[in-house]
Length: 120
Image (cartoon, rainbow, N blue to C red; front, side, top):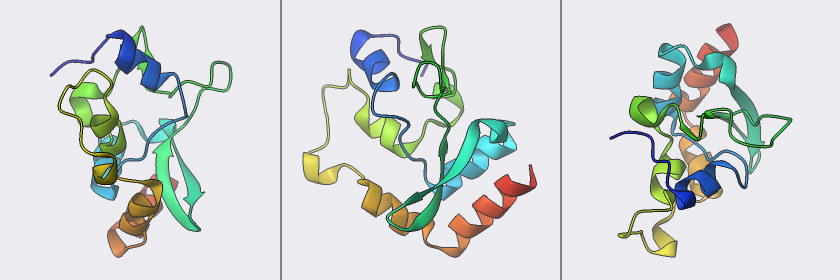
């Protein structure tokens, strides 16, 4: 799988800020050296790790040269589900909402991932 450069996927990378990874995905990104491009934010009162947003463009920090540079490394869950070009989209009720993602982060694994990021 390689980073998609279709108009629909690129539009997702350029809009609505970054989408959330699972704690396991965040751990992989930290292990692969992407920790400096991640930040800790509150979602529904829970600390979560999410890709930073470029201040000048408001695009996801991983959007470069017209595509997602972590697509083949570990694309966050909300990004994978929201990919614009996929024809077999999940039903709206199947989309992992921020509330659902916050519940995943409100766990021992989520807290360990955040501690690991803070040590980077």
